[in-house]
Length: 169
Image 1 (cartoon, rainbow, N blue to C red):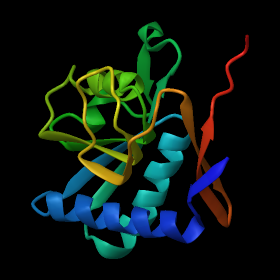
Image 2: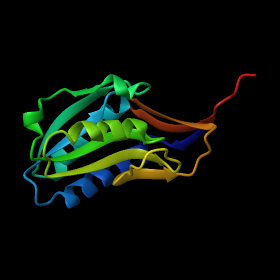
Image 3: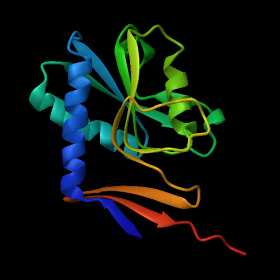
């Protein structure tokens, strides 16, 4: 396993992405940070903490609940559609891998009129199977399909690691 980003690298990336989100949404009074359940939501919480210190925006946190292995089973959110209708929504995940999770997360929000929608990821892998991009990204990596990216938000020890998937014969 190879460490790609350490704790201070990740804190720096979170701060930079928060500033980019603020700059992009200067004309907004309120935004919705919609984190994909698991690390995506933790990443959204970290972005919210920084935004609270730098921006006068009202930020509504939303958890996007979906089965990452079987996204067709349905998607729901921790807040009602009325709370994000007509708002700027940023869908947040830790890693943009194939694009499957992020595209189904985005699809959920397309069922109500939004003012604007963007996406944010900590790690953008450059081999997607679905036509979705990250508007805000911490790092872009050209990885092979045999490589795996893992993100850990353990208190005081954030990490992004790269490992090779060992195939079983």
